[in-house]
Length: 290
Length: 130
Image 1 (cartoon, rainbow over the protein chains, first blue to last red):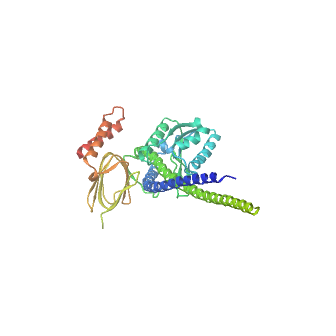
Image 2 (tube, chains in turn red, yellow):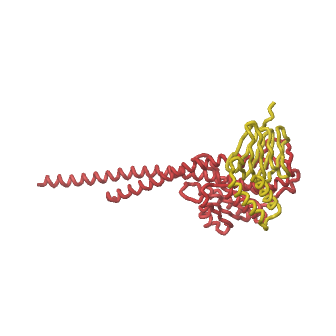
Image 3 (cartoon, rainbow over the protein chains, first blue to last red):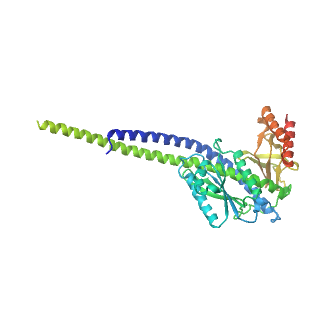
């Protein structure tokens, strides 16, 4: 059995851990509020953008000559996957959930004998993926310096994806991120952004639009913007999810630490009492033998 | 019979402005300025750098935009833009900054014609502001 001194030390160490996790939870909660707000504020833009594109693509007459970003290259040989994770750890299953989802997808693609290229956004994803898929990772981006998700960063990723697409480096692009549902639930998502997947979505109206200039020109201007917008949306959702996930993970850790302190304290008191009792018995039996 | 319609301006970070007592909006569309009144036909167009004028009962407002998309449908005007400033809140130094940036961009030689044209537009619009 551990000595009294050891127990005392352990209790002190668990208590200080608890303090840290509690502080992290507070910080995450404060950040979560902001991240959630901006995720909600960012939604109208991406929804509107989606709507406009939907209306446009329905209105387009010549499907054959539609921009490649919309219709794809006509084959599905090489897949590009943009895996978006956080730059910091200690956020529960946040990163591993995305990675798990992504790995399933990778395995499927490789089974089908197709090419795979990976861009990781956020250093945690890169750390976890480079062991198995190190040779597939073509780019690793991290926005450690930026405090909050901003459009400028998303635009950088978007431009890079488009550049690679135009250079013919891949046919299909999918982004992986966590969608924020609530503090406890984040749903890992795989969203295909090139070619744009509009199946299952019906345009709200059959109304015809006037276009100025013509559809093709608008589309070719709009589609690259949409890529950045979708990536930005994913970044916003991700940052809200990250904070939510961290908050609940730290909450759990704080509670577990509390339980541990209780258990250790009981053990400590028991051994202390046992020691006292033992001493008493020794004194009494010593006195009796006189 | 009111002659008002709703306008909504959103940028990636948030919903920038919502107004539903607007009588006319003038947007710098790609092929020239375009005034939109109530019951305009549904239209989609995109913007070049310029000034959005919003005329409403509660007063006129002017915004400087660098790019964006406008969609008008069922008397709802949506403007999606990534760079927008309210002229009333924009001070001279901010204008100068933007102008300097735009001029630098316009003076680059390695850009294509369209970016060059857009940069020139920016310079022009910003100059008229000063």
